[in-house]
Amino acid sequence: MNGWLRMALSRMPAGWARLGMATGAAAVLAAVPAAAFGAAPDAAALAARTTFTPDEVAQILQHGPWPPRRLPDASNRVAASARAAAFGQRLFFDTRLSSSGTISCASCHVPEFQWTDRRPTATGLGDAERNTPSVANTRFNRWFGWAGATDSLWAASLRPFADTREMGSSERHVAALVRSQPDLECGYRQVFGQPPAATEDDKVLADIGKALAAFQATLVTGRTPFDDFRDALARGDRSVQARYPEAAKRGLRLFIGRGQCSLCHLGPQFSNGEFDQVGIPVRRADGRFDWGRYDGIKAVRASRFSLLGRFSDDRKGSTGESTRRVALTVEAYGQFKVPGLRNAALTAPYMHDGSIATLTSVVRHYSTINDEKLILAAPHPHAEPGEEQPERPTGSVLRTLNLGEREIADLVAFLDTLTETRTGPNRRPLPAAASARPISPDPRPCG
Ligand code: HEC
Ligand code: HEC
Image 1: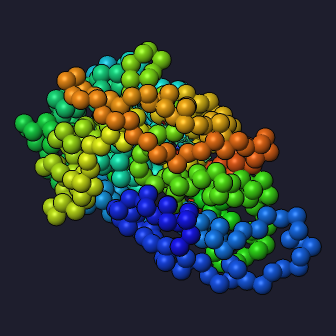
Image 2 (image 1 turned 180 degrees about the vertical axis):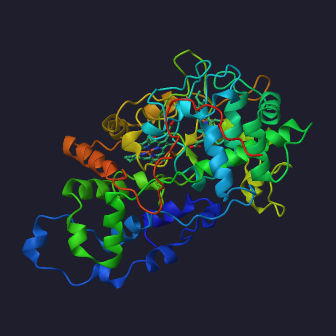
Image 3 (image 1 turned 90 degrees about the vertical axis):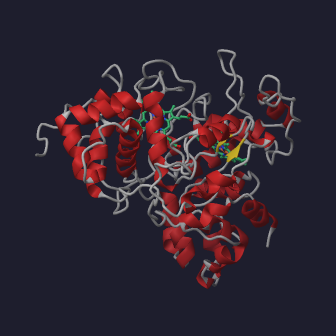
């Protein structure tokens, strides 16, 4: 096994198989058909072109196929229900769910902006400290939010209700609304087969999260030029391979090679689903600290809506395995989720605090990263009052890359090819109600 694969696999989370991905180097390599290394075409034609070694081909292939298999979510009994998705879609655009009646999920996750808001940090009823991530492709996640403070798509969908800076409502507000508004009451009944529980606000809230999750699970990004290249590489189709821009090929070689990007941005989503520190300061502009994963672990363990709690529909509880195993370690301090990179060209600004404006600046950031910057970004581990100060974690894989201008442009050209270009069976057209405008209550409530 080569060094890269060994490193990458050691960083691959144990629950990977859930996403239907290859779990070992053997599987990755076996997926490379002999044709990919077939007879060389005439040398003149190749001279100007970037070609990949068998090792590189194996690494490229593990970033697909796209879309991945859609495995069911056992923790959500309506995850795959079309009726729940339709109800969830209406909820997603419904401002009544906020305390002021002015904010919906789509106020921040704006469909036209690839389900983000183009702001460095989110603004709802107040100012939040983190950047709004896209909700597309979240069905493939294991942890949610920049710190992984929630462990299911439905629990992540409940989080903004309680945040006073986001929607500022509560389980009581949401449950009362679902009981009293005819369109919501009836939508709930149709999806869950019974009226909203009269007294159990938490249960109604969890169910609303599950309908919202069913809708968001339909948001899968489309095929990209990279996917066409990757699949052509897998079947040895040289004419399709030739259509992929040379600059993107050079950028891809850097991404999987010297740049070491795919140590973390791994697999079809270009994320290993885990957390790391890449030199983005934990101290915020207002002087407070965002401890990232360290607090995320505490939050997920404390949440009554986690996969270990009674609102999970997974009777066997196997979906909660990662939550059960997650341990509060000092490495978690100052770490943030490795974001997927599909459609990243459409979701500026970047990083958990929205502090980097363009993809070129992101690549420059990695190019100039060094130990000093990493230490400055997270100067000392986070101790609670009265706790002993822990040792600073060491051992980042990040190295100063010193990229030249052309290499920076090549990496950006590659990242640009992770942008969807057309819709396919894997991506539904934007929902009819997809607009930043709030929608009025459904005029045709069911009987
Ligand atoms: C005020 C802006 C705002 C509103 C309103 C809002 N969100 Fe978010 N959303 C965010 C931010 C910011 C994060 C990242 C939170 C964090 O890391 O702590 C996020 C994270 C998420 C995630 C996790 C995504 C990932 O990649 O892990 C999901 C899912 C989500 N929101 C769904 C919703 C739903 C559903 C609603 C409506 C009920 C909603 N959001 C309302 C700003 C908002
Ligand atoms: C050690 C793991 C690791 C490596 C190696 C790594 N990244 Fe990242 N990447 C991350 C993490 C973690 C974040 C989020 C950091 C934060 O918000 O504080 C991130 C964020 C990003 C983002 C911003 C995405 C968004 O939506 O905000 C881009 C783009 C990106 N990385 C590209 C790259 C490229 C290109 C390389 C190689 C030069 C690379 N990364 C190497 C872990 C890594």
